Length: 479
Figure 1 (cartoon, rainbow, N blue to C red):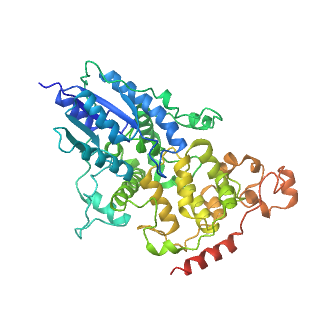
Figure 2 (tube, rainbow, N blue to C red):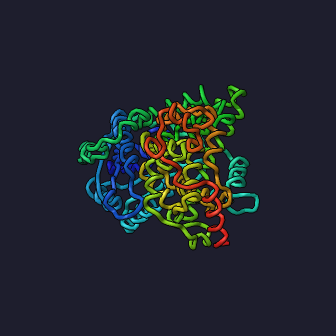
Figure 3 (cartoon, rainbow, N blue to C red):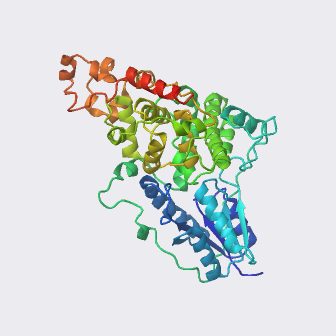
């Protein structure tokens, strides 16, 4: 048997279970060289954000331990990915490079560049599915075309064959006798040194495949049954909080799908919640397929008329929104949760995004960029798809004239005010009646709660009714 090794190029698939590329390499019997390449020097607006870099440190640490236990050390290299992998092919004499197919344009460009470099050589280059429920481009509706909006897309997914079952963890990886040298994850300085802003992230999250599996199983045992009824409540959150694990590929959508279906078969009482949960996994899937068909999703509105939208760009308003100083308690709570933990509940994401785009008339792409930098689940398809949905310019868009009233949204979905009181503690002593509208509270109520408006908590930076009229007028201008 030839000893020419197989390189397995890890990207956003940082696990050893249900990893078809790794399993194929192990089954081949030749030495396996697992490698991760950090390409953070190539110019571009969508390089890893700060929160993602923090998560990547933990994810790579966990992956390296898993691969070492299977017999093959993880090689860490830095630089343009195609160049680094091609150099590693020459260095090791590898005859094969395997990787998982991903949809993000930068990953697709890197894979295409690598294939170009290997053209004319005897090296086999192969991409495996495994990052999505269904391989990209394979979901087809009754018309014979790929659905462009979510509901028919999800119906097509449910009507077709179920996702392939996850593949098992390889029993053993054969290492090279002299594995190639690599760097250490510590040398990459992915975590902040000073100021160390990651304390809240460390308290909220444990990156890695083992943590992802534990979170999934705990949610299926203790949370998913109530998801349909409570999914819009941010406190206590009824969501799975699996999104960063899915983004970094520490758990695959196929694992989530089949584990959930198995629990549904064993416990009919969770059926309604589990179906709603899988539908949200389907929304993530839909966004990836949309990105595959529209590589510009993160950079330009899918509806061309929005290219001429009259944004009123204002750095001061944008900064107030980023820092949770808008004067609207639910908006400020969400932005502070994001800054502290690297995550925000989905209902609150919609409220804060709508506020930025429609109340403040700031470009959706500015909000998308902030989320990209601060979210631990900064997934390009989901992030861009969500912002375009809120802005009304995507394929599956909410009408632009649907403008959330942040006060009413808070009173409906945070009844009792637990979420706002947690993240905006300066308002905690206000009675429920005034909690989400402190600017309307009588002076004696404010005094009793220890609040001085404009000092302890800002007054609203815009009036809701006036902002709504302005947003509708802006929309009329492009109709």
